[in-house]
Length: 274
Image 1 (cartoon, rainbow, N blue to C red):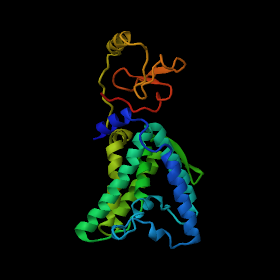
Image 2: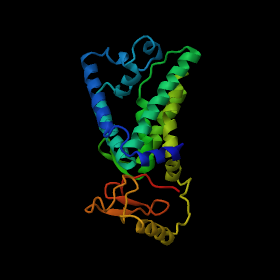
Image 3: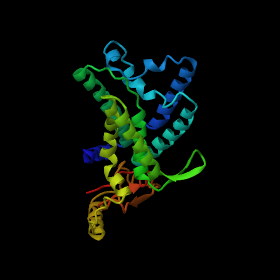
């Protein structure tokens, strides 16, 4: 599944909503301000299959905008979520980040309806664990990055991820069934997208030591270029040095094979694995 997602993202780099986290943060901040004016608003925004089937269709998406807290701590959470989300989008690209986030939303919605139709329990849900799963992804990609906890204490992301994992486990064991499985559902897409990064972060999984014959691959590329009207072509956007003579092109040493990228995608593309 991950391989298919990666191929789709490479072929459709512009798929999705650019700067998605900016819009989510603004919407959550507006919801937070509205709750300050009228605290009875938020219960009308949570996901609840019973009310959705009785006309409250906006709950299918409004639960994503519910702030993580109704206190001023929400402002810190807004900043943190925005920072993590925008960094993930720059690292993965717009398409992959959108698929990651909305797959978590879809899994949560499906679980809510499944519980309602099978057990008859209309559970009310928010997107809290979906946002927290982004924290796991960020920590898996940048385990040694330091952040200032409470703007004072420097802590590496991988240790904060362990604290986040404890919070997830606490939800699993403290919440009543079936709400206690929401943390598990929310983290499924994390394992799909970042499972190998997580294992690599703790030294459990090592990168493949497959040796790529770059000399042979370079000769193959040159043969293809000889029959074309260009020398360099970006593997993401398809732009060539013939169409864009002022554009800079480079080859990625982290990709399996011999792949060329333009200056806009050399640091933001998805690495080829085969």
